[in-house]
Image 1 (cartoon, rainbow, N blue to C red):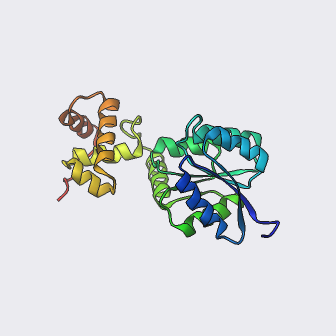
Image 2: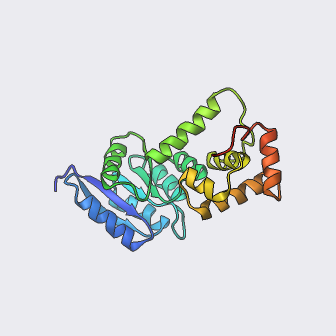
Image 3: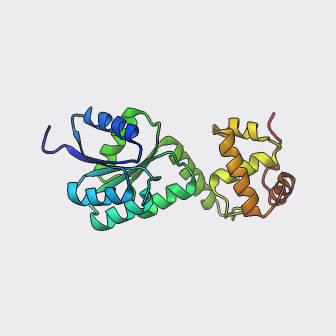
Length: 221
């Protein structure tokens, strides 16, 4: 192993996932795993002790989450780059990670080559996002830059997508198929929409959406 190999710290509370990541990183000739952490607090301590070039950071960990761990690692050791690798694709998680100093954001399930490429990219000081996250960011910023205020700014991009499909007459199963997400995730988004719009029923949410110009196109075929 070359002395110039990228030093990688893996922070994830699932032992089997950490094992898989270790195997992946160790398979690359230009990388070496210098430590593993199961909590955010341990990730901070090991980042100070092991001096990694890149931390592969999960967001949902006990005692201290990945967002706060990222913030503290960057504050204490700014030369370390953090690459988030998580199940969470919600806008809040993405932007919170970016604000904390993360240089990359991938979803678990990303291809092996994509993960290795992302490690090299953030280590070089560049930013990288998985295809799903990049598309969400582009959609968010393009809607913010078109000059027109977006209705219901309290909704996330995904919640806007769900509300739009609801207002076009789509049921939960159709929404799940259209967005490529699970039925349970759709129900969670619908519940969030109801809460943020302060409505009790789907019909009321649809009325408010259409009054704001959302979902006025033809419904799904």
